[in-house]
Image 1 (cartoon, rainbow, N blue to C red):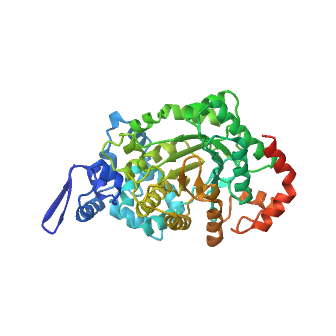
Image 2: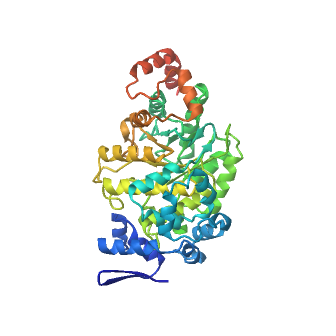
Image 3: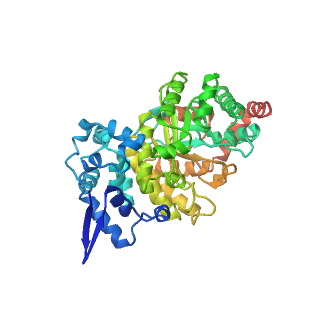
Length: 466
């Protein structure tokens, strides 16, 4: 079906829904690279206006990637909840936007319809929204998950402690881990990106985190972000795996480039569940996504990068994850050129994920060759905090020395907790209080010194014993 809108004396025509979504998408370099973006600001506005009049039910009748050739499309269509959709099935995309922003739509209402919203619907309505709209609706959504603590409660804000090391040196990892814990970081997960996917190296890192967690009785979870096949191998050998990680995309072809498919994720999900390592919940998956993955793999099928990113969230929500993280600026300026594009993309991803019922976090980051800096990241950090983002990254000095990109530091999380009055996950908060760690003060050096003094023998023994 074609779509059109007339501006002045120019009649803009869009061949199909896929084209309309791409032309309506806010400007970003990835869509320029793919050759699918609007040719002018006027055409973009025409596309957005035409999109506003599209009925939501059109997304069930016209798939943007064929059902027969893509298992993600089949997942989206086959798992769609018609009963949940009934509350919004008469709305157009524009009316859906107005409805989401209305005062009567709260978290309970949004929870009741989330299974009826497809990723394409979420992406479409986001294209009609200003940044403040994306923030206002996401703020309404409360997505709570549990493993050893509770993540996503209103008024709480968590961090992934990310103690990466360029050679997977255990003492270096341990030092960063302890540093982060002393600043109140790590309630979402203590998660390491290994420099190598060697099962032996990954196993040593898993044992290290588990040793620290058990010795200090920390109510958190661990994850070494190895490929899902490596994690499966380690699960089968009895390794202390808490969470199973995998990067995912929004098309079958993209996931094939990652060496995965839905059947493999299902196998890993069931295997991780079978370990029964969670104490208060069974959310055992950790997924990472990011706009541009499908384009970089030449697996986007002509779909704009924001819409195809939202399709990855259909994969994620099937497996009830503890954490989903959009690594928004990691791929580089070929996909998100500058701070403005990174900020917009992050707010879109967080909004779409929350609307679809996912526990969304964001890696507020940029590569060193992007037109962005820490001021841009401070802005985004604050906006996401207001929007109710579940978690961010915590990295020493905000500089990842293994992945070589800029992210957020332990101090950044303390800043957000202080200015917005947020607290860590409740179980982790009680542990911090018990240890005498002040998690609300970005200059809590006296408390840190007291803690280090009281635990110096244990800390030194831990690091020296590695």
